[in-house]
Amino acid sequence: MNTNSKWVGAVLVGALGSAISAASALAAPPRQGPGVAVRASATDTAAAVLPAGNAAQQWDQIAEDTVVGSGAFQGEGFLYMAYVSKAMHGAVTPGERSGQSPDAAVSEAAYRVLVHYFPAREPDLTALHDAALAAIPAGRARRTGIVHGALSASKVLRDRAGDGLQTPIASTSPFPTLPPGPGVWRLTPSAYAVPQTPWMANVRPFLLKRAGQFQPAPPPSLSSPRWVAAFNEVKSLGAAASTTRTTDQTAIALFWTANVVRQYNGLARNVATQMRLDVPRTSRLLAMTNEVAADAMIAMFDAKFHYLFWRPVTSINPASVTTDGFGPAPGFDDGNPATVEQAGWSPLLATPNHPEYPSAHSTVSSAIAEVLTRFLGTDALDVDLQGTPSFTVTRHFATADDLRAEVNDARVWGGVHYRFSVQAGSALGREVADYALSRFHACG
Image (cartoon, rainbow, N blue to C red):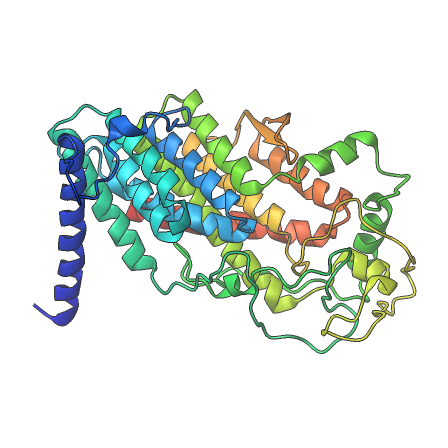
């Protein structure tokens, strides 16, 4: 046996031993006695309330609450969700693995991954973990499920070690810059926040070969008719004080300000409920959703920090640029006589603190639309989606392209993207999903 094989064997033996200990602890009453620290038994944690749904849905909701509650940005949020869903899917693939309890398997897998990445949440997660296992009949199936869940979690943690994830959560990083000038990204009002997670451009994808595998072509030249059309469209329809944007268009722009980690994981769970999926099939849908979304976000950040293209607020209102360490203040105009800058212009929505091209929302939404198309076997999705930050508004989408088109429009109407950026993002998301799903099906 070579050194690497010995190391892998040690990891698996350690995980197996730990899982068997956990299974034994659930199978027998806790030992009491002076000087003995005992983890609370399942019956001692009855106050922990599990979310609705099957075990995979429950732990996806727990993961979502943990990740979003940590303050993670939406791109890195999908990385953490992918770690969890990949472990759950691995724990129940193929099928139910020699009579194991799939509920125990996904509960153990998700719990171990979440505790690894969010150790401060261990008490709450342990209470939920014990409550989940206590709801499963004691016996060999539960014990076997715990073992396979632990092994799957260990494999994911081992495989993703050193993948480029940066901590602490919501942190920035250095990145290659461009000389200041027309078309080059600058920090945006009102917060002028530091660049959001540039490091994501260097994260190792889950299914793509590399982050830039489908990098889109450059944005249009500032002297082109396409630039002029996009500039004028967002200037008119995306302004905070727009007189051309309708009430419905404003409502749609606001609808798409929901946290996309919550939005699309909630959608996947709803699809699982409507289709009455069992735990293995639910785990598969969640893994497809989150691994593809994570790769779409990695590919999108690769392109954003490669092109470093300026946001509408910067091009339309050069006076909005402040001394930010990336160039002079005020900013530059585009040098095109066919466009007219406007002092004081501001967008309907707050501009995210990362570069313009391509649109993140369009990229990930298009990728998710493709996931659902493949999983359902049709692009006639017929799904309801909750939106706005409070998730109190529901909109219906008959087809995948209906969803893509509305997201694209919403980001222009919100004043945060040009038309060519949402089009490039939509195309990128579909390309990423097409390739990633072919790999997912081949491997899973």
